[in-house]
Length: 304
Image 1 (cartoon, rainbow, N blue to C red):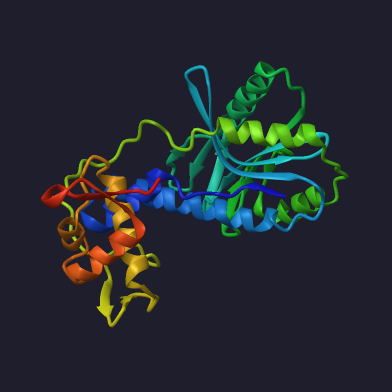
Image 2: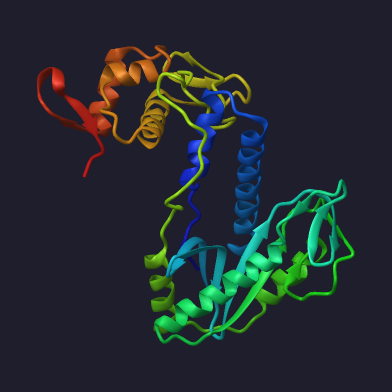
C-alpha cells in the first residue's frame, strides 16, 4: 500500500529551471545530470514496488534528521516483521570494486554507496530507539540500471545488482505480512518526520535579470516552446499543454526561484517570454491565485 508518493525534490526542480535559463559550468552540468539520473532510477524502482501484492506500507522518499545529522532514504517498505531500507542507484556503465572503493574503469573514485547505506541504517535505527520502537531492519543497495556492470564485487547479500533484482522483488512479494495499527502508526510517524528538502543546497548563483525568459517544456525541461492557438507546444517532443497549465507551471517556477518577489501580471508576462497576452495571464492568475493589495500595488499569492 502506497503511503507516500515520490515528489520531485525542490533542488532538482530548481536545477531544471536554472539549467534551461542560464549557462552552467561543466561541473554544474554534471551535478544536474547526476540528479536527474538519480531521480529517474528512483521513479523506475517505484514502478516495481507498486506491483507488490502482499501487505506492506510503501514510503517513497524521506529526508530525516537525527541531532544535527541528515540522512536520506529512497524507499522504505514496512512489513509485519521487517522494515526494508532501500537505496537506489542508477549508475550506468562499467565499474570496479577495489579495496572497499568504487571506481569507474577510467580510475575515477566514487563515494562507496554501501558505506552511505550503512550510515543511513545506523541513524534510522537510532531514530526508532528515540521513540522506543523495536523493529528488525534490513538495508539494501539496489542498482536499478540494466546497463550497470560491477567487477570484483565481493559477495554481499545487501547489494542487489541488476541480475538479482527480479529475485529480490520475488522475495519481497512472497513474504508473509499482516499489518496492524502499530505499523500504520509507524508509517505516519516517519512521514511526519520527513523534512522534505535539504535546508542548504549549493545552487549556481542566479538573478532574475540573468535568467532567460520563456516557458519551459514540461517534457524536455528546455525553453523549446511556442504558442499555437490556446496550446503551448514543445518543439522537441511535440507535447502540447494548455496555456493555463503552462502559465501556472511558470508561476510556480517563478515563486520557487524567487520566493520574495511580488508576482504581478506584468512580471508573469515578461517571465513567460511575452508570448501569452497580458489579458489571458491576468485571467489565469485570478482563477488560480489570491489577489492581494490594492490598485497599482496588487500582486498574487498562493491561495490558502
